[in-house]
Image (cartoon, rainbow, N blue to C red; front, top):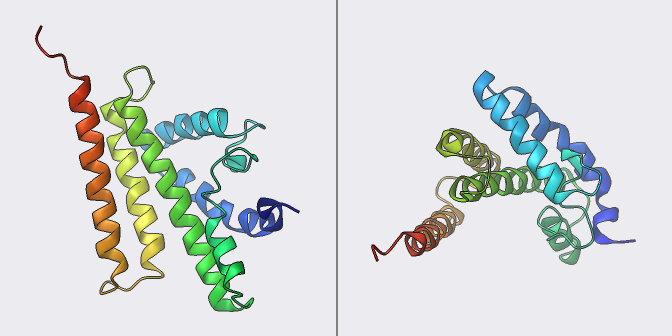
Amino acid sequence: MSGATKHQAEREEFWPEVEQFFNSLPPRLFRQGVLLKNNLATFYSDTGQFNDILERDHDHPLLYLHFWLLDDFHTPATADRARLERYLFLGLAFTFAAVYTQESILDESSNFDNNFLLLAQALTRQADLSLAQLFQESSSFWSYHRRFWDEYAEATLATADCRLPTGE
């Protein structure tokens, strides 16, 4: 049994919360969300279904890493573990969607433009709300989290700067 298969039931239990987020977006963001979900389903699922993203054998195991860590640490099946699994899964799913959206905005060949910035922001905010269920405001997690996003922003902007015409 693969690690993904082992935790499929948990994924299926938490996925409706991802769908609920997209379904509750205001009309214009909802339409952008539909396009985002279609893109993710096309590029990250063999079935073409949004709820199947990142579960192929060759996909990065982003949505499963936390399950595996909890297994490796022999974390017992308690309410605390279920809470960790839920909010980490949701935080990772929304972060993946946010980063994909931001990267697509910067990709001139994609069908995403600057109008999708608010969707990316909503996804990032939702990821942070999920993680805030686990980490108190005073937790050192947030300084690492901020540093990660700062470094991501700098690397993304440096890459964008490299694409600018040199004026030759």
